[in-house]
Image (cartoon, rainbow, N blue to C red; front, side):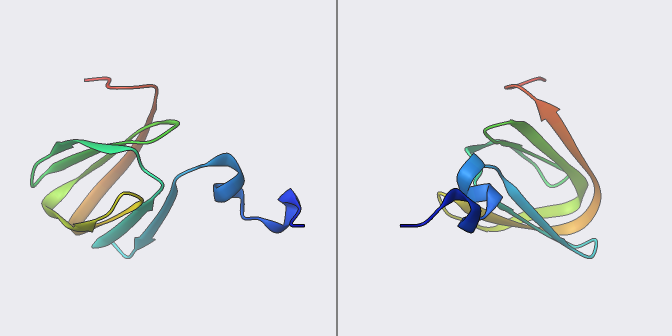
Length: 86
């Protein structure tokens, strides 16, 4: 039997995991959906709220039901609680 202490927090809490590599690559795990996607802004819904990624030449390299990879010149990352604030 596996105890909760043996599992990673993201699994127990169903939390999003964000990995940033330099200023040009970002991976998000455990997201719910893509709300907005342009070459300067990507908004992603998570269980806890939204993640707003701003930059230049932003591109979603790939996405699955659980993970996405964003590339481009990242300039800011913002977290917002709740759903769909404009």
